Image (cartoon, rainbow, N blue to C red; front, side):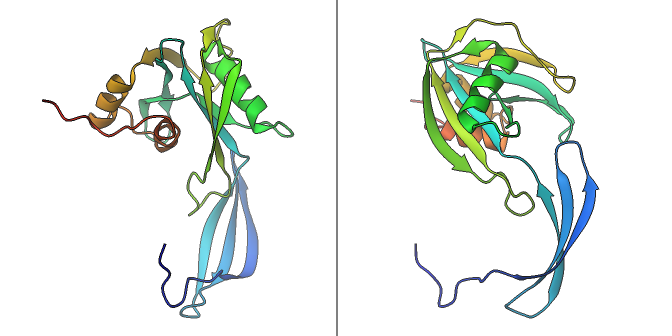
Length: 189
């Protein structure tokens, strides 16, 4: 990557002001000084524990997907299983737990796919992506009070069509899936 003559520098922290505690996040406001122009800016920061998501593949290479209502968009989404890492829990253990709780599937074949920053503009956490291969259905769903989930499976071509059609557009699901599949639409002959 090419650098400009001067790269952006960290902004000096002037004040850290606690905000309201929310169900999933703690909020706070930071006042920072822009080193480029010397102006102060107040920014919202959402403190969150790290998250996991899982690309779960059946022995026939179908992807296990979840459909659930999301409060932010106000609609039912299609995405891959995932959730918040519990305090003191390792991200691999969280991935195994979330897959089992949300889908009933388990696996003995796990590969770490790396982490992404969900939205570094306001969030300070990571989302760890895991691949679970040869998953098998062994358990009933174990959903918390904020979940109502339906399970579906799909091949990669169906996933591409859902993405192209705007039915699958959850950014973290797309990030995880793109670490396993080329999600670009295939041209038709």
